[in-house]
Amino acid sequence: MKGNEAFAEAAIRAGADGYFGYPITPQSEVMEYLMAQKPHERTGMIVLQAESEIAAINMVYGGAATGKRVMTSSSSPGISLKQEGISYLCGAELPCLIMNAVRGGPGLGTIQPSQSDYFQSTKGGGHGDYRLLVLAPSSVQEMADFAGLGFELAFKYRNPVLVLSDGAIGQMMEKVYLEPQKPRFTDEEILKNTPWATTGKTPDRERNIITSLALESAKMEQHNLALQAKYRQMEAEEVRFEKIGCEDADYAFVAYGTSARICQKAIQLAREEGIKVGLMRPITLFPFPKKIISEMVARVKGILVVEMSAGQMVEDVKLAVEGRVKVEHFGRFGGIIPSPVEVVEALKKQIIGG
Amino acid sequence: MTEEIIIAGFGGQGVLSMGKILAYSGVMQDKEVSWMPSYGPEMRGGTANVTVIISDERISSPILNAYDTAIILNQQSMDKFESTVKPGGVLIYDPNGITRHPERKDINIYTIEAAEKAGELGLSKVFNMIVLGGFLKLKPIVSMEYVHKGLEKSLPARHHVLIPENEKAIEIGKELIKTTQTLN
Image (tube, rainbow over all chains, first blue to last red; front, side, top):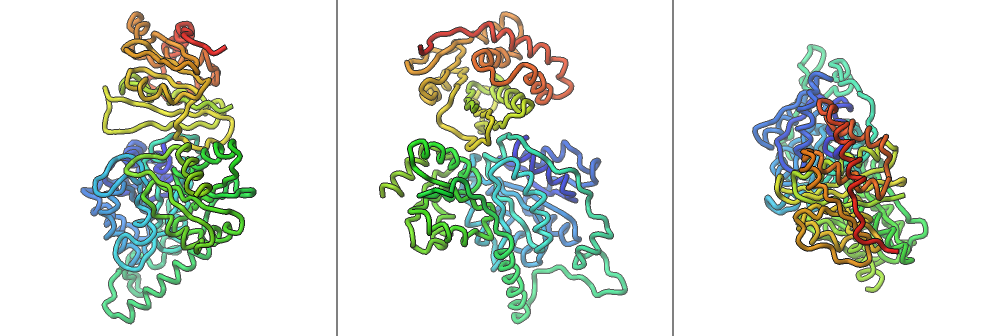
């Protein structure tokens, strides 16, 4: 299965209630697959092609407000269009699943894979002090796994979860194991699990209001403090990462997604030449595994951050390292994927030799 | 065992589907696989290529710049990928439409006149399976039993009646492949 298809199938199986999207390369397979599967016949899940990205994200807002498991997906320019809606979703504390199959930018850019939306994904992107919980898959298997995990975390924190994929992971096929079908929430479960949802007022409770608006500054500050406390809880409980070949490593790559796969090949090539290098792969980009990177400094002599961007995650790595060892960035961008050989050369030139 | 393969030619030649059938055959034989297409705005008539990796171990990078085997089906792909075959590796090409033949001395080179044969037999739709047959003759990394299952998996059910024709084409390909240059 292609990464995009695995994500779509896994979302159906995770008990999603609705998908709202607008086609864009390289993630159109998500909606194509969903339409072909007719999930309304399988589970009752709604799949709707909206008139625009902006409409799609606001349909997600509406669905999420009623306690449903709803989702959207797009690629970079389309995700930019959704930013206003994402800020509102965070402000109103609504759970939802968003997937970005990143392509090269800025602007319309190219349809080839890239990782240049890291800042947008992890630092905001829309307005206001908010964070998304960001999961970065590096295989087709993780595309499938993170659909279910994404919904779970979104509801745990009442916050949108972003699956930050890219064109390469979306388009490639690998072996994948899928979870069995989970039932969709029943109306009773929605009342019980999401008591905040707008399910229709009953005489025994106050009205539920879903809004991101609070004109009173004092109230808004309290709301912001509550949001920040939630983000700190994510930092304490949700950091996910994978370390490969780090036990005896003198040097380390830090890379996520497609770049992490390329680094794994680069590790093999470098070790054939006797260079002991490992890989630290952040799986959550927010919360960022800064503590793990900080601890690695005791062992490694230098870190090469490999990204398909001009250097974005490297800033977070530098913050974690605090100048204790050399941190350099190597990247190709605009839709170019670096080769494993290039990565090894960069390690030799920028870290070992430099 | 890890076999890293690039298949490259014109869009419409069945490059991506050949890779897909090979990858599915690998899955059926319980191997680790990856199938990474070049995707672009071009479709039929443009260039198309796909990287297929079949391995007994977890696959690291699905994107490579050196291959054990290159299967080349047009001149542009020859220009682009001849240099990417690992020393000692294998280059298989269909000479039909090739004006500049491979020049490297450090790789094994084979030709398969699949386009001509497919035309002769009126089997132009299974041209890619003839080529696949040639590859499997040299590198039997998946057995025919699993290729059958791979065909079942990658072809829609309504096309399953065509499986025998595909398998026949693979057998023809095994006979058709010719050695041009081997090391030792």
